[in-house]
Length: 112
Length: 114
Image (cartoon, rainbow over the protein chains, first blue to last red):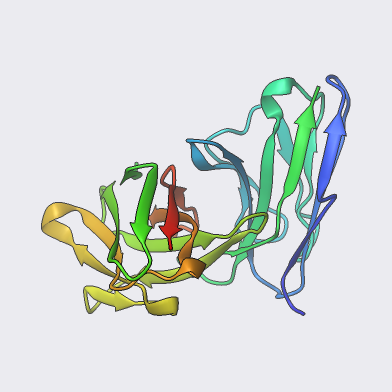
C-alpha cells in the first residue's frame, strides 16, 4: 500500500542521547515535512524539504536536523535529546504546491 | 505570516445533531484552506480543501466548509453527527502561492454522545 512509513512507532530515550526518526515515502512526492504534535498546540513544523537535496527550517527547528539525500527518505535527527522534545512526531509529504499532505502514523517519543 | 485559530478545544454533540467547528485565519495573501481529521493513534487525513472557485466545498464523510473572505473564516459543518465522527479536527492554511508549508490550528476534539 502506497504511503508514508515512520519508524520506530514509539521510543523512550534518555536525555542527551542521539536519535534518528526514519521516514520513507513511496509516492515519489517532491516535498516532505516533519511536524511535532503537542496537546493544545496542534502541529508545528520542524523542518521541510521542497525537493531532494534541499531543506528548510520550520517554526521549531532548534535541536533538530534533517537531510534529503533522495526523494523517498527524510530522516529527522535529535543530536542530544532533551525532555522538551517529548512529543508525537509526524512525517508528511505532498506532490504539488498546496496539494494535500499525506501523513505517516507518527512516532511517539519520550525523553526522560 | 499566516495563522489559524480554532475556537473551542473540545466540542460535544449528540448523535444526529449538527456538528460545527469554527476556524478563523489570518493571511497576507489569498489562502488555501484545509480541514484534516485525526483518529486515535493515527496520522491526519484530509477532509476537504479550498483553493479557488466555489466557496462552499464538500468533503468526505458528509462534511462541508464555507470560505468567507469577509469574515476570514472556514468553518466546518456536518448536518448529522455519527458516532464515527469522534476524532480530533485540524484547520490549516497555506499562503496560496508556490509554498508547500501548512500552518495548523490547535485542534478541536469532537465527542459524540449516544
